Amino acid sequence: MRVIPFGPLLIHQKIDNTELQYLKNEFLNSDEFETFNTFLPSITKRKRMNPNKGEYNQILKPYIQQYLNVMGWKGNYQLKSLWGNSYDKHDYIPPHIHSECDLSFVIFLQMPPKEFSKIKDEGSINFMYGEQNYWKAKVTPITLQEIVPEEGDIFIFPQNLQHYTTPFLNDQIRKISLAGNIILESYE
Image (cartoon, rainbow, N blue to C red; front, side):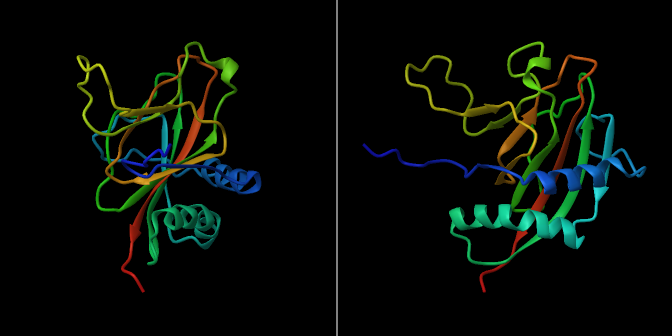
């Protein structure tokens, strides 16, 4: 038997703990929080980070390169944008895609232990692909990946892969993520 890979390439990796702590501190130790002008809801704290900062690129390079290797991309890439999000109770991001880039990623810098969740899959990240209206079909395709991330998880995916997060219901919980966009440059 052979399973044929089909659909968008979504890769889940684990970021090094030292790098994770560095990125988390970079986000937390800044007072430059802002509200972005997007169609997404305003979450508690959001901050743009400099995508050209050498340390960020050095940390992200092996994870992005791993994705590009699996994808078979031989060209270069550029980190286009980078921002952090801090979520409190009821904060979430609705289904959306990213524009003006080729790839996107999200790193979970802080996640509560799973025992703090009140309901199954609370605080999950969800990836949707294809049609969602298979309610009468006897054989249904897999169109949704729902993952409860752990601290240090990084997901890299095509910019047009629809994704969203679900909220936490616990007042004591705080989730922090770092997201970014990547431009693929032409082959060398």
